Amino acid sequence: MDRSTAWRAGLVQLAAVALLSAALGLALPHAFFASWGWLAGPMAWALCALVTARAVGLPVGPVLVGAALAGVPSVLAVVVGLHWLGAVLAVVLFALWCGRLARDRRLPARAV
Image (cartoon, rainbow, N blue to C red; front, side, top):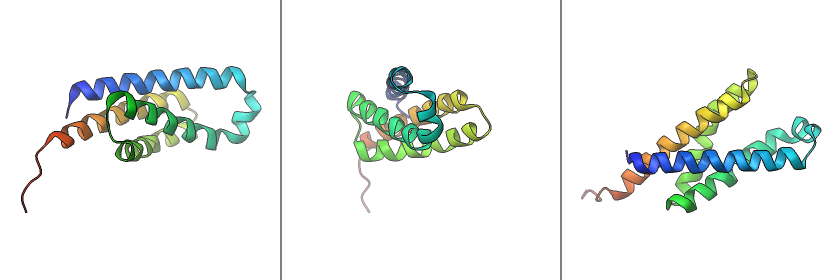
């Protein structure tokens, strides 16, 4: 795993999620999130992952796959009422994915 990329991806994702969450929280009423949070949350997470992919220099497709996979435990946290704990867990898992992705991109292709 590329630890440098993992740290950078985690910090960028955390900052992007925090900024977007604050902006949406200030701009929209709580009722919006009660009704549409199931859609707005994953869309915001994916948008932040796109920002992270660009900032860290990773390919968008695999980064979005990692974002989706990292978001699964977050859903479980939301179900039990620990939304922000789930978000932190998702950021950590996403960062690890990005670190692994960066390392795998640097490995030479094996001859078959």
